[in-house]
Amino acid sequence: MSPKLKRKNPIRNLFLLFAACYLSLNSFGCGYTTRSMISNQYRTIYITPFTNQIEFISQSDTGDKYKVYRPHLETDVTKAVIDRYMFDGNLKVVEKDKADLILVGDIQEFRRDPLRYDDNDNVVEYRLNMIVNISLLDVKENRKIWEESGYTGDFSYFVTGPQASSEDKAIADSIQDLARRIVERTVEQW
Image 1 (tube, rainbow, N blue to C red):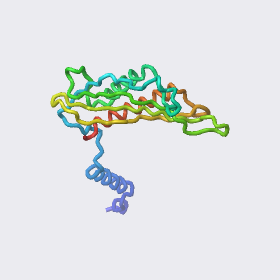
Image 2: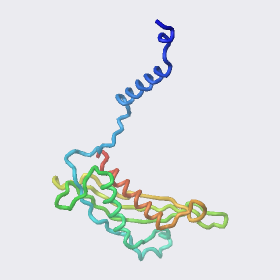
Image 3: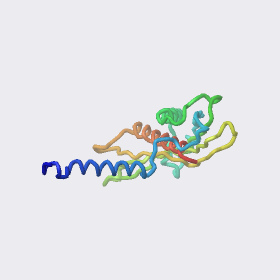
């Protein structure tokens, strides 16, 4: 037999090592999955239109100077939550009479808090917080599965500099963050 055939192939050995590591990680890994943790009995959800409980009259109070009232905010939140459920795909969004679950929510507060100031005490960064109360109802058993008060979606943005963003875009991003969190809360194991 030729001496070349008796030598070990380092590339082949390295490949076998990687293959063994890959197989062992898949067999004994952390258990991450993209599947939903909710029960198989729930396949559909209805999202009630969010209500806006923010009082626009109270904005003049000095203690509430960072609270913001924005017209039609409830419509934007409802649409974003529906879109996020459709994107997630674990629960199908349906009409109320066909739903296994019903999500109910109302907007309690919307805040724009300053985070950073420049040398002249001008605000250069804000954090938007969208605070809602939400609950998930089981239609068939006529019971509340869970309820969350003060559930928050947020987003920080700069008003000046190279990372500056408009307030409208920041509001849209905070709504998207809230919608993502609501869907994750729903599809996680209760």
